[in-house]
Image 1 (cartoon, protein in one colour):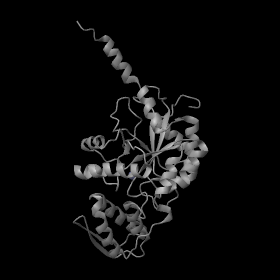
Image 2: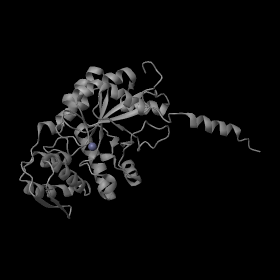
Image 3: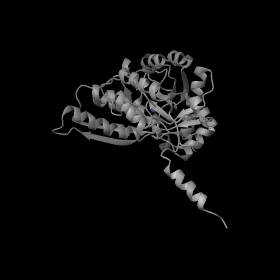
Image 4: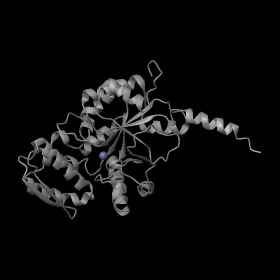
Length: 333
Ligand SMILES: [Zn+2]
């Protein structure tokens, strides 16, 4: 007869364990001061410096590749951290790298290949620019986005700021609901309606290809892919997903002359098909934005990352504790 008592004890023991994984991968985008940042994707240089000082004190900061290797070997410390950046804004080189060098903390950049080296802002920044920098909003707006008509009427008693926020929200949802190749015609229509001309703002520019190579040459920096045009992958057909997954990888490999086998899902959007296609495209590791420490058992193409917003050093320490990276009972760890 099977003695089930030890199993029960083991189950109770496992249930009592507060942490079911170890180490956290942090997700940043920008180190900059922005006038409009509806998704809180920027931390200021002062906040980033404060975060790095906290990490130096409370965590073991590893290159993402070492984090993954030590995890596979079972030697990853509980308070291990790897830093990642998405997209490829120029401030990653001009503002983030000098601070990473000061603290000797490594990071990985997941570069959007159609943005880096281009002379155009990302589609979400162009949308913000169109709505918040155009002079006067029209009383009505009607544009076609991917064949769908979007209409907007200026509300009677809203403040200018509220009105622009509401219009931006509606436009963002409409743009996000169609695939990125549909965006250009919609931007042209929006330019006509708002009498707006897009500019490449210094504050929102991408890395040039030379700057990408300069970052990649730093011993602190490694590079992964992030598609070509930043679509919501799970919302587009498999053929389009495959083109974005393979295209982003091939373009970066050509520019950097090295193998790229790490990938971050734009907008954290993926499903089982995306994961299969990422594997078929040759990626060994995929990173999403599910806010969790890294579980003990996890598909390497479904690695979670914890998004970090701008916050003070005290809030960041609490943030690390809440997410199970910094341990509560240690005096300094
Ligand atoms: Zn991104």
